[in-house]
Amino acid sequence: MNKKAGWQHFQHIADIGIKGFGSSVEMAFTQAAMAMTAVITEPELVDNNICIDIVCDSTDLEYLFVDWLNALVYEMATRHMLFSQFDIQIRDGHLKAKVCGERIDREKHQPAVEIKGATLTELRVQKDKEGDWLAQCVIDV
Image (cartoon, rainbow, N blue to C red; front, side):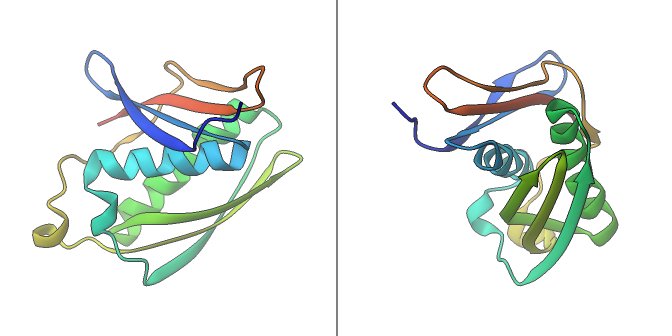
């Protein structure tokens, strides 16, 4: 039985854990990225009027996940943006994504925290016996 795609936060001592899940590894990565946006603001508040491409490579799926999240953190910090739309393709250790969002508007988005990066803490990317995927880690805020 496939679970509905989604995301959630989980408790960690000083930081915030994020989980993404779905019927494919791409969906799990997408939902984890949405969970990361939700740490900062309500994802529904983020318009998708600016799109950029992100590329990551790793032969290890867990490291690819951390690289993906850290690439998003880098783009958020350098472009002063938030993202809420993610189109990801993963093939043979190569992640190619088109992400869309908008520039941060402090009044509109009321950012709660600044994310410093994804960590290896509680890192897990796995497929369960029903064929659903989970991608999770702790992010440093």
